[in-house]
Image (cartoon, rainbow, N blue to C red):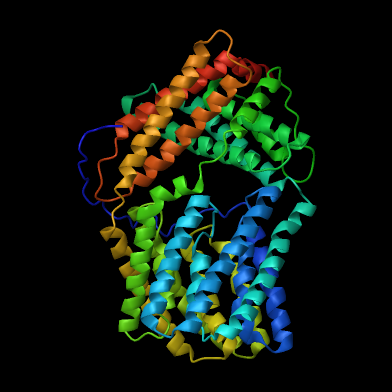
Length: 564
């Protein structure tokens, strides 16, 4: 690690262009959208039939767990969803017990802020994925301000647990039809990303010699495509490593991911059309394409070696997240207190707005803040249009909430602000499960809390700097260098051990992915040491050259060329 004294970089210009740009939807957007409708709809309609819609807030706590873990294989999804449900129950239990013991808004806001910080740290450390800590913060903050007695807590927790169990079943149900669906999708993404890089490499190599400017542009484009491909391959390995017993279909998927890795290391020797054809064959429920290889045994021994390494302990993963947790606690607390000072009756909306902002760095936090404010303001207008329909009766209220649940998940992968347009009226309608309220008052509170939460939350992000970002880059660079040297030694060895070179090559690829993610996160942070861009680029290029050499040492590029 460098011993040079850190030289803080000045504040970077905050982006506006592209913050609201609408992208392509997720390829599985309909899965969380349909899951949450079923998970929320059954309990809510049951409570509607029983005339106890006032209890819907507690069942929503468990039902919204159905939004998580849709990218995970079913064996890992079963564990992840169980932990999500338990985490939700723990958050709600703390909130309800606190609400039953005190009515002090100052204390309730403090507890809400601490819960939001803990939820942020744990969700980031476990990498549970979308929607992250926001749902936890929304439910626990609302529960803090729900009138409660200690005797009611067990019954309300039982409702949340029952709905959580139903959400677990809903999340696991697709596995009965397509048991290897998540792994197949992750592998297909890796193959398509590798094919895109191989095609760009061939196209730009011919034109790069025209001029220095063209060469630089082509090189930058290739670097972005290679980074995207490496990230997709890394995600595919993470998906496969999360599975249970290694059946033959999973071994076939592992061989396909190896082919994607080889394409990234030796793009000139790759048949991109073959990769895309394999990706298409992974759709549906047909058999996994068979990729026979003389070195298949060595490849899978390398997989075994990498699987044996395991993940870092949770405590080690939580350490680097301390600045983000501190930002969350401070921002949520201040947002709640400012909301109280302004006389807003629902300060938990300000807490949730602040909690939703915090991303990997200040630049991304700013972008999320803009998206949140725009989406919420448009969503308030949508609520004003829908309120007369929802107020026709409890059944209309429930159906409107279900429609907004579906819309939020259908749109949020295109851009966060689009999803917020549906989340906002849904949150406003949920407050009316206990009885219809005046729309004007709800809308005013929501607008004030949104603006307060966004401004105060972002200010907290600026105040609490993440000086560990520079240290993380140094550590990532050291990790890449060690992995590269280890791979180079095995390349030079006359007879590396079975699977050793394959495992080392993938270890280096994983280290390069982490380096790129760490550098991107640090590049958007303020008031920290300058990002060593040249060192990062040099480490990436030498690392990828070593990967290419490893592929040639294994003879895998020749294998690909024969199939072209």
